[in-house]
Image 1 (cartoon, helix red, strand yellow):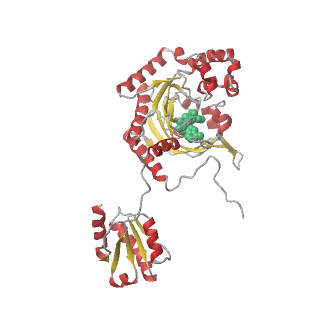
Image 2 (cartoon, helix red, strand yellow):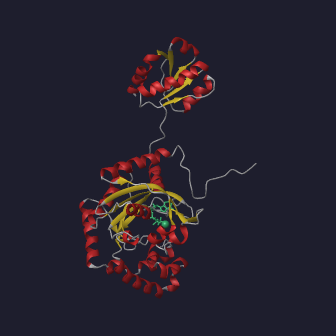
Image 3 (cartoon, helix red, strand yellow):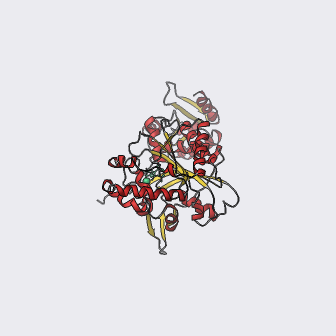
Amino acid sequence: MAKNIQAIRGMHDVLPSQTPHWQYLEACVRDVLGRYGYQEIRMPIVESTELFKRSIGEVTDIVEKEMYTFEDRNGDSLTLRPEGTAGCVRAALEHGLLHNQTQRLWYQGPMFRHERPQKGRYRQFHQIGVEAFGMAGPDIDAELILITARLWKELGIDGLELQLNSLGTAEERAAYRQELVAYFERHHDALDEDSRRRLHSNPLRILDTKNPDMAELVAGAPVLADHLGEDSRQHFGQLQALLTAAGVNFVLNPRLVRGLDYYSLTVFEWVTDRLGAQGTVCAGGRYDGLVAQLGGRSTPAVGFAMGVERLIALLEEDGRLPEAARADVYLVQMGEAARREALVLAERLRDALPQLRLLAHCGEGGFKAQFKRADRSGARIALVLGEGELARGEIGIKHLRDELPQEAVAVDRLAGRLAEIFDKS
Ligand code: ATP
Ligand code: MG
């Protein structure tokens, strides 16, 4: 026999028992973002490879080794999006959304990175991303962080730590970079292989190493905060003051750098210690240079992305998630004529009682088998339409969960009786 085809490694199905968890999270996010005036944007999953090279940066992990890149039938190089910001900026530019106006946008969907799959790290994963364009001050940075704080509160996720840093301007970072490279060169022997590779391509990323053997070396490295100019310092100070005034706690993490090249000034992460090594559930920052880098007029911008799988893992651990919705009513039918009548009856009930979750049995099956399915559906009530009921113009009502006698109701009274039964619950 042929071997069953399985999902691609690192890519997962979300099963019916889990989709309510996703829907719960998505509904909460949609609601909160709507209340802050953010509008949803939907971009294609595939973009030109060039877009990611130009935005994320040629020497980042993502572009160097994680992208799903392929040639389509025209020979064009395309890439499954590894993140959403680049596509969002591309779309905003393409449709003139940034002309003399501010934009508050959000999106959600799958992202693709060819990483080593492990708990909390997948090759297809999902992000909910938020981007704000045209606002340069620390107030919009603070607004984004307040949105995330509110989300955790409304979702019931606690114990997350907000880490903040400022990466300064590109010039400030360049000066710092030189000093950092000099420091690591002096300690070349203590660098691991990854860090040696990054030393001249992307030395700031060494600070982000997850290798415990490097912790001491990194702790002794020069700190970017000492290289910030007056304006950067002020922006960062004001952001902190705004957060403090709004009652949001944070810790300063001078070693917080982000994996993507385009960040400047504010960067932040929400981190938990409950998910093992994959502890960052939300990350973002300011990227004032990116719009111009992609060919637009220079436009300040700031955004963040949440890792949906990691948030769901936290919610599932807390057991605070809704279960899959159960049916209220299961319609059992027997006989050719009743089967025809059953679908019509079900439609009439759905018209009359839009809140009712009604599962109509389809196909063959004896009463016993149908009642078994009715039970499994979670329904409180089975409606019974057999030949006898049909002839009498009645429907049988069998209570599956309560110790109540079976009833027979005239067809035209059925909706009213169901309304009574479900109103009481
Ligand atoms: P990490 O340091 O964990 O690799 P990152 O800096 O690469 O994260 P971002 O590009 O900032 O991550 O993406 C934002 C969020 O998306 C992350 O904080 C994380 O929650 C989630 N995320 C990133 N990569 C993955 C992945 N491979 N699988 C699951 N979630 C991911
Ligand atoms: Mg990563």
